[in-house]
Amino acid sequence: MKILLCTGRYFMGGIEKYVHDLCINLSDKNIEVVLLIFYKIKNEEIQLIKDKNIAVYELNGRNGRDLKMINQFYILVKEIKPSIIHLNVIPILSFLPLIFFQGKIILTIHQLDSNRYTNILFNRIINGVIYLSKNIEAYYKNLNYLPKATSKIISNGVTVFNKNQYNAPKEIINLIMVSRLAQDKQPHIALEILDYLVHNSKNKYHLTLVGDGDVNDINYVNEIKKSVINRTLTSNVTFEGWQKDVLPSLIKAHGFLMLSRRECFPYNVLEAMSVGIPIFSFNVEGGLIDMHQNNFTGIMINSNEAIALAKEIDAVFSSNRWQTYSENAYQNAKQFSVPKMTEKTLEFYYRLLKQ
Image 1 (cartoon, rainbow, N blue to C red):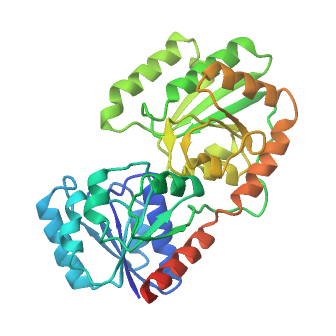
Image 2: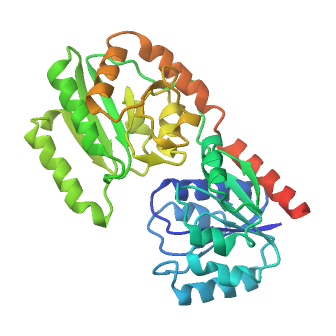
């Protein structure tokens, strides 16, 4: 069996982490894997894959309609002759070479995106769909998305530690947010939450923001930094930027903020739970509820009101509830390990090849 694992860009996001972990773990099981990046590589982690003697192809496409890239894809598929093409993004014109492919084609859905043209063009091409959670499957089934494909729920995987890594809060309660500094992730709401806590709580709070903005987010990031100054929160906020390894930052944190408008199945929350950090969130559209539940792994409120969530956070740390949430988060994360993700994916490969 030979797997052509395909992704869009190779930067620093959750899709890249999924592809990276799956690629290496399949290779460790002596499965022949080839990695194809449709667009660009901008992550040093790619060297770990090359060190495993896994072939890596970077097509440098401009977008999903780049005919030069699509032609390169067609040529590579003919040369590599994979048993399975495992897509993690769908360049819109990739249906052209995929029509002629005789093996199996699988898509893992990483985002809440219901492009009707994708559904029309790929409905008869894609053989298998991997959904990351029950709620994501329900979301797409309701849209009648790729109805002809065989489907399976396989959640993202993270490193699972032998014991809870959580450090109890002492003088200062450190809240953390790990994400792109982008409007859809809503770090400005994290500042609203912190502002309320700093000026209304007997507890002392600090906020750590881990992540950078994309090129299109420069103005938004500047507004965030101005807001910190205007709210006189300079001594209460740390901008750590993008980190290759977020574990050191997570281990110093006491509460994790998930404030996105929508998320498929967020890696950052899984990583926080794996070290026992209680999660504080809105009821984000997508698969968050499949890993994080209100009053179990932390707090999830139905409204999108910063002050309401801030009050809940303060109530947790003014009691001992954080201890229960921490242990529940850690135990919950155990079901989402990289080895389990890899094994289930491999089983799905074999199942489709038998069809």
